[in-house]
Amino acid sequence: MGIAIDYSISLGTIVEVGSIVAGGFIALGVLRQAVKDMKEEIKEMEVQIRGFAQALVTLAVQTNRLDNLEREVRDLRRGRGFITERPVGED
Image (cartoon, rainbow, N blue to C red; front, side, top):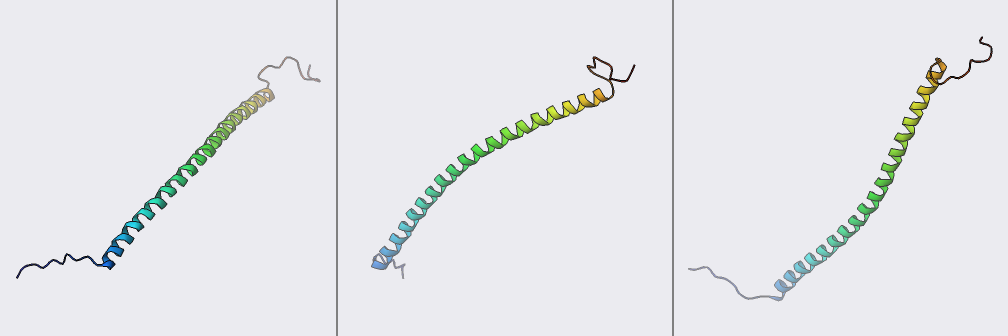
């Protein structure tokens, strides 16, 4: 009473193993293409992010300039700053 092992290979077994291997190669090819596509999309997104970063820097500089200009106008209204003449009507 030993263990009986059937070493015969049927056509169904060969087809089954072949379809599993072929499916694996197909899945591998699809995954490689998906990774390539994702790499290209990431590169495009990096270019867009650089553009957004440049726009944010420009916006920050403009905001700083406007803040400085507002401060200067406030100072001039209070009589501080580079006022070289008296306003007309004040003697």
